[in-house]
Length: 505
Image (cartoon, rainbow, N blue to C red; front, side, top):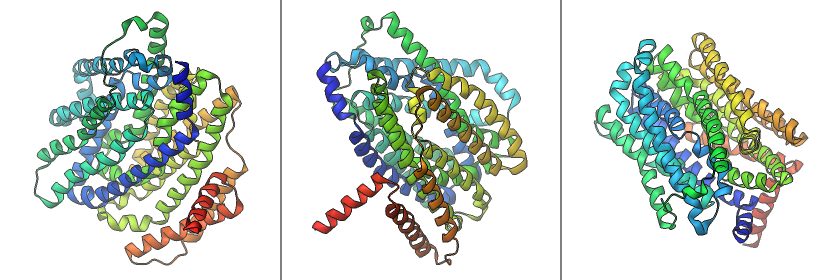
């Protein structure tokens, strides 16, 4: 065990986070490119706003049910796995637990839905929707649960966060784009397309299972002797609070689509979903960092390395702010180009793009605060706050949607994101005396806002040249000023190494 711990410590370092973040980010942004063309050319032009609305609601229900079906065990695995780690004993049957717990959760979902179905249909207009798409939702949920089980095991046991991100962020977007291309180029009824779309979404699940099996890690034998009362109590406690936290997180992220669909119509849900995609690009780099970072931080909590956690926290805030702000500027400076590429009826979502991008920027700028809190001994406090926040989110949507429509839903999202990240920031500061921000963070924000203000004076060009030149100018000025002022040491180091390599050649 000690030798394994040493190997893990070497493997699980900021270097590993950096390498896997870079690898995952490359594929994630290839996925963004595919997703960009999928949304602008295929989905917005190939499907009607109503059909896009149906897809958004299917995805929303599936994501929420997946979180409920996992019973919090996937989130708990990051914090609890260090106690199971023992490769010689196949990690004490941890993979078996990763599969049996969501299986039980799925059965509970089906039972709960049957019990609550009369109540749900009595107070909403979803009866026809569920009659038409319940099979799709349940199959997608089951496939997503399987993917999450093997992906989490691959991440915590094999310390491989990149593969799951590549499959989910790149390959799945590619297969879904292929499915959408069929609708655009061949006449295909939506009722048939939805099944092809479902299969495209399930392909990563099959691949991740084969990947784990190829690593000779597909051991489903349980180790009930290891499940002592203290271990069971730990798993139960962490999972209980994780399922509440995770479920409320998903509700906060996806309730807007469900409420828009119920309050103002399926068509506007489709417009919201398509335009919100552009805003989600801002937070993309954080996903891979959180995946591998959670494993590292959990190990550091176990060893009591507060200095190491603080260092990761500070670097995540500064680096993610640097990247997130550049993406935010690039999106909003090109808003006129984005609206040219999608059908005119989607122009109503212009400020959805702004607010969802702002939500992503807040998420990026506050770094790995959620991961730090979720893997600490104070994880319960995060759950309690989320329970209150979900009420705030629903009330905000009920207030903002009737007044501002889909823009109101996006504004409610910004409010929720700001509140829970502010809470996490203050809580970590008080309990652990970790404060990740300094004047450099403020300088980066000021430089970014100045670049955004100046770029609006640039004259408009034809679509493609305008995107290329405008984005290039933003990147050169933004990174150039930050480089010269030396307020982002890691970025400067990366640029200097690149210059050195080019000079040698």
